[in-house]
Length: 113
Length: 115
Image (cartoon, rainbow over all chains, first blue to last red; front, side):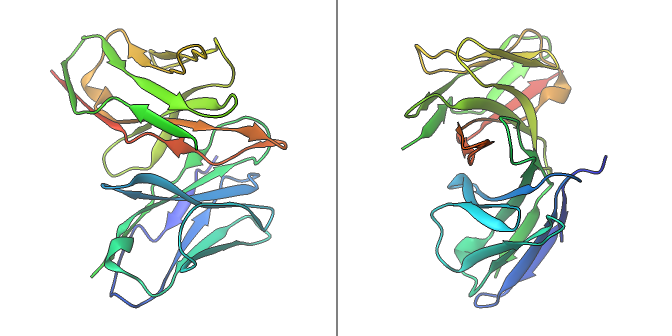
């Protein structure tokens, strides 16, 4: 069974640009969540999508957005990049129902210069 | 709000030593509790979980018991191996409306096991 796939693994962008990250969840999983991991702030929840609808949202500015497609794949977009957006972005999938755990991808390492 | 506090690292042990990583939480209600592990250059892997008070989660020799009275979920292993070297995260989430809500993580504890 394939795991959670995130692409690309590494990205270098310039301040002011925008970026799109992709996440393919485990087959059959309908929930995709996104987290930002930085040395200073640790792991912070960005948002969760379930069946193409945003179900939960963290405390991030509107520059951070996402969407989910009918095949449950999700994309996350960050516009007008700032240096502080440099982080590891992790995607997690779950069935979206029940009290099960989440399966994480390997992440996308974004560096903003 | 909800929060998770875990012991500051780094923790350095010799192989076969006993491991304890403390984790306490603050939450309104009764969350599900998790331990995740992150190896260098990788994402998070679910290590174990407990969904109600007095539940014990266990996996790969690791154990943690959900203690409602002390709001704790300490991770233990009787004999660590070099391959256990990683960062360990304690986390909580709530189950409501048919699903778990977002995970709230602790800051993580770096464990290094020397041969």
